[in-house]
Image 1 (tube, helix red, strand yellow):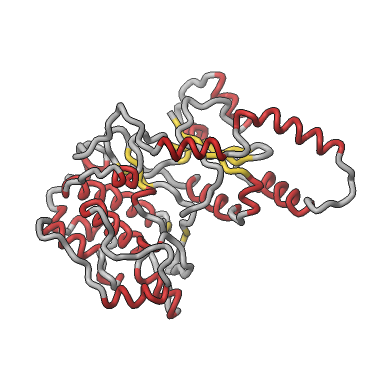
Image 2: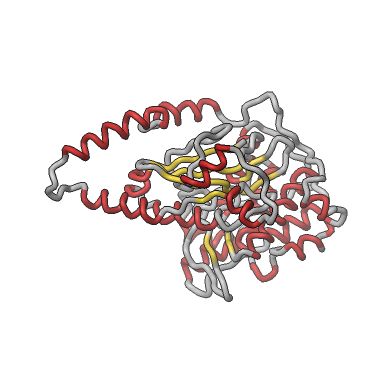
Length: 364
């Protein structure tokens, strides 16, 4: 079972998102981890770019927060540990995610957490540091704002661990540790982190508070920011890391299998507002080809758009993880006709399920 995301090429060009889409595809094609939402196929047609990924039916943590789910300390500690394993893997691949937040953490049917959305992720190597102001403000680490306002040496992998701390605090308390919004001025945020202290709930265990304090340390040099640091945390002393990495530790919160874990009103609005739905694609492309064939050969105002579309068509990389795995397996299993078609054309003819359809690749 898979989920499919499609991104309209013209909309991506108009919103200047093509580079982000290509970067996300480039990253996803090179990584695979038990606590990530993994890419399985990427392909294109004349109108759209497609990404086929793991189908996770448990909903994202933002949805469950909005449903007033009361997360226990044990449950939140499990999410923190699973994100720690994901971030440790990403660091080994030189990747900073830069947008860790409840919206981008999806649960599977058993309740395990998976990190998704690499739209603004970046790759740094050989001691490099990132400098761009990127992320969702309430979850962005102080050094990102400080680097933007005051210059300096930039930031590194530690920023993702700060985001995990903000997420964990929010799951436990229902709101974030700092009163930050998308409209907050960057300059004011630099001052906020130096003057406002995080308030912790007295009912929380001292081990949980100590872990949150370490994750929400303003100075990145003193922040918990590695799997080794996490293993040493008293709050996680009893964690069976080997079992956890194989999903053998049972989550404290399991999504109800009989419910749809998303907002159906929002999903319906997305379907209604989608101006170029997939089920009408065949007829629409036929009309488009007819217009192209009758169009005058003189240059038009759409030449730039067509040049961009041609560039996408040429540069887009088709990906097939199943084929890649078979090529690395010395004893490949027999394949059916559908799999053979994927090999020959680079396109999977049909998917068992379409779990999420998005008209664009923008990140909040």
